[in-house]
Image (cartoon, rainbow, N blue to C red; front, top):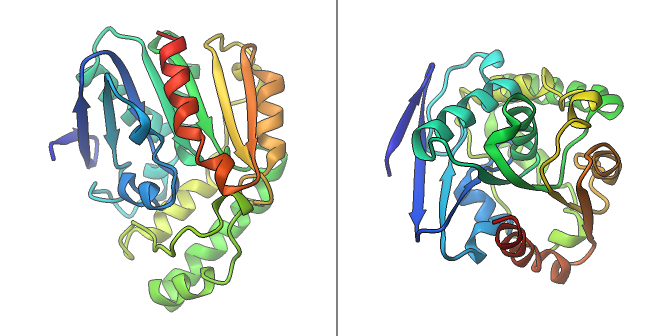
Amino acid sequence: MPTFTVPDAELDVELSDEGGRPVVQLHGLTSSRLRDRVLHLDLGRGLSGTRLLRYDARGHGRSTGRAVPDDYRWSVLADDLLRLLDAWFPGERVHGVGPSMGTATLLHAAVREPDRFSGLTLMVPATAWETRVPRADEYRRAAAFVEQHGLARFVAAERGAAPPPANAGAPPTEPEVAEALLPSVLRGAALSDLPSPESLAALGMPTTILAWTDDPAHPLSTAERLVQLLPDATLRVASTPAELARWPQVLLEDVARRS
């Protein structure tokens, strides 16, 4: 796979070029494009006739990074995304899709350069604003746990958590982040939040928000607040694996409609 140089990292990038509209797909925190596929969050598998750009965020998957928490702020990840779009799709409006950290990265990039995006498909948005403070504390505790006890014990402790009902039956996975980088990645997430409500309210691109139920890390309240803030947004909620399985079709329809 080709790599793309950004400040202090090399990003592993994959382009599926079938012509047509440009689409960029991101992934979630501690994940990668490969792990998101295992977790049924690779909506791009349902696309055809597009130029689909997938990549691993800095410090994740096959991309490199430094053990510096500030490198993993969502605003820095948005810098990386905009550089990628300048290189692969210069002068074009792109449809963006991604879960959790990927959603946050897209929103930070869209606030900064709204004309770069023809539309957004945002998946399982994470805690934000009022709910971000306790979640940030959890990330800092997790970072300290990894430093003290190691990655294996961290993974074992996380295994006890029940998945959201919509993702029941997904196979167990491990973080796609090197042990030496994981504390910094988690602390970078703790330093991050979604853009301000005021800045989001100024975004005009059509947006679909895909949420699921019973997930404290990705509460339905964030998705509902985004629908209230974004001028042209719709919400779809999955509570079963069958409903989650329809999400690739939603992306396909979004890209076709916004072309």
